Length: 521
Image (cartoon, rainbow, N blue to C red; front, side):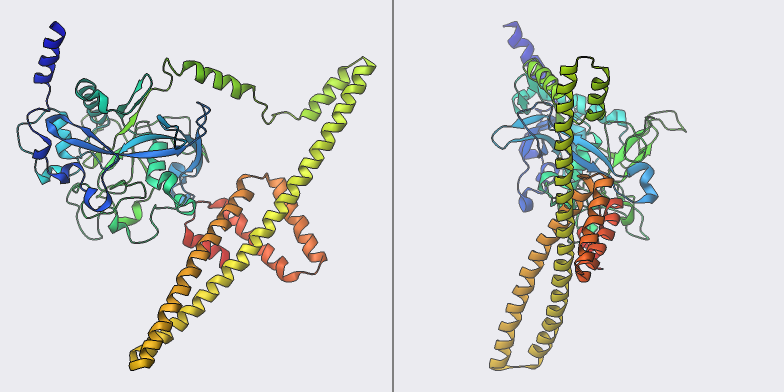
């Protein structure tokens, strides 16, 4: 009886029951639902509202609790390399979908808006209007964390069953880590690999279709309404670029030529804001600000500092402890690439062995190992040579397809000009020919897109899968073979592809247009 009475007091004292969901304009909750489909998850908020989230799948080996997904963050622009240069990182979602074979986490579909911010702080008296759909700015890093805390505590008390969970683990809200944010911003597992690595997540349209930013010569008017008249990224996330700068969980670190630098700094924001111009907004952009205002000494509240929360969970729960421990031990015990040369280790054992029979046995093992290594190296070299030749062939195919498309486009223009000055049956026939030509061009573009994806995969295989020595040895061997066979045309293409490979190693995040230009120029 006492417990029931206390629970009733909590419900009465807790903000969120002053209004109903019907009192909230749809624009404040999930404005993109009408045109782009409903959000993957809606969590209730105080004052009878809701907050929309998208599920972000991260493919991993679910049989191993310590398996994670590698991907590459950043970009290759030297002007900002100290902050956002390319670096490898890893990610795994907080929850597991055994049927789909992926891990996943949730991230807000939109940036935190004024209405949600007001509701979480308990201000339910005034009605909620479309003006409350404006993204909330002027947050400090501490404010954002406090909002996540308040909202999670409210959910735990009033809607615990609505939070994602798994076993003993219940989800909670927090700011995103930089890998979580950038993986989601790039489009995650739904993005074409050639687009995932690009400067921005879209290949068609302009930034104005996806983001609120400052037009040249115009003054910003503050944060815009969430999702208004803008399109989402491939994962259904709105305003991942522009509007408000999104605060990150961890502090800023320099990029120490491919890794995070050891010095932790101030707060980090991602995605840019409505106060930035178009050229300043891209996926890898990272901005550092002081935690505290140098003028007032108080926590810094930037005009465009906002938040986009994720739903995470603890890693090591009671029901996962044994699996994680056993998985870690199994991974540690698994034979891995030795840092020392195994043949050198065998030689050391041989030099120290005094028993003639054991020396003979070790010598046999040494010989077998050496032969096996030589065979593996020869096999790898042959595979590298074949991959180089495939890359050269793709260069030829992409060049020919592009030249064919250019010729067909000229034919299309001539056909159109003839249609304009024709009439009757002749005009109908010309229009039929025009449609057939347009369809041929569409199919050829699709085919070229597939070949371009194979071209990138070939470059990545030669860049990431081989050491410099093997790669160069394969190139020299292939070039010598073609020269000996007097296949000068193919040798020229191989040399072109080799130059492409060297360029790609420096800028592996180039977009599809730049990659095509690399192949055909």
